Amino acid sequence: MIRSVLKGCGSALPANCVSNAALAERVDTSDEWIRERTGITQRYLAGEGETTGSLGTAAAQAALDDAGLTIADIDLIVLATATPDNTFPATATRIQHALGGKGFPAFDVAAVCSGFLYALGTADAMLRAGMAKRAIVIGAETFSRILDWEDRTTCVLFGDGAGAFVIEAQDVAEDGPGILATRLHAQGEHGDLLYVDGGPSTTGEVGKLRMKGREVFRHAVVNLAEVLGEVLDEAGFVPADIDWVVPHQANQRILDATAKKLGLSGDKLVVTVDQHANTSAASVPLAFDVAKRDGRIKPGDLVMLEAMGGGFTWGASLLRV
Ligand code: UT7
Image 1 (cartoon, rainbow, N blue to C red):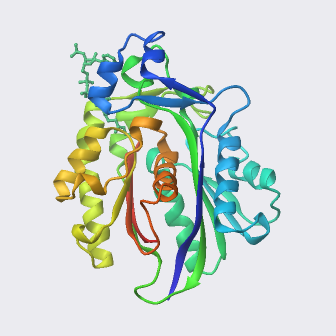
Image 2 (cartoon, helix red, strand yellow):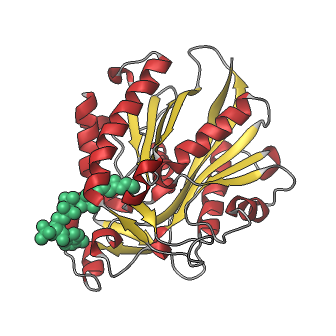
């Protein structure tokens, strides 16, 4: 059977690391509040010259290096982002050019924090349909540029960064590697709980992020536990079969509550929210890359990726590494 197999991964972070204490010097907050409510201790914020495109390019190049491939081997780029360099062209095309690629399709997917799951699901479907052979799938964001730095209920929660996978269509055995199942969902009725209050077709301005955090939290735990169950059922596994869960890194308390609901042991969770804060579409591939590089995620492992974000949108994907 044809499956999309992970060939390599990579990530990139801005140079500037900002601790909670440093943030508390310019925002009415405290290290203690941020740690207790979210688990976050620091975040990386893009500086001059660092953009979604530049971070995405660096992560994509790292993933190509990890795979032992070059851009000449690639025939598709899908970028998940809610903070593109420009309204258009798609930042994926800028990344294609920066990497030295030509001619093959490159486009952006907008599903905010669950964007990487949407991008991976789209690229996987295209690979299995024979529309491409090898894809770079990227999650890259510079949320610091859409934060209201006067709003302490949101600005302390987010960071910037990028992560990328290289996937390849391969004919594999039933118990072989690759993406085994993906489920994606959206529920537009909750759009006003997490959104940006601007855009090209409404205000003509970029706008700022707005969130009703408590309500998002409540929906996140329910939706994530449900979609994980759906993906496990589809692939024929139970929670105990999972080696690692790589969740969207929004809040340590959401990670703990979701794991508890599924009866999953906390030591199977890859957690980077403490180091990176919430990097939206970048968070899942960034966390995956950290755990792969430090040796936790190994070939043959069964890994669940999951995320939930603005829209609402949410999804999960089960991968045999
Ligand atoms: O990635 C997309 C998905 N996004 C999420 O998953 C975010 C989900 N939501 C959350 O993670 C949590 O709801 C938050 C971390 C955003 C907030 O935690 P909470 O425990 O729900 O706190 P809260 O909003 O109920 O606020 C509690 C108190 C309030 O004060 P009062 O009204 O009790 O006096 C806030 O004004 O904490 C206050 N507060 C702060 N204090 C210090 C809010 N933000 C801050 C802050 N520093 N940064």
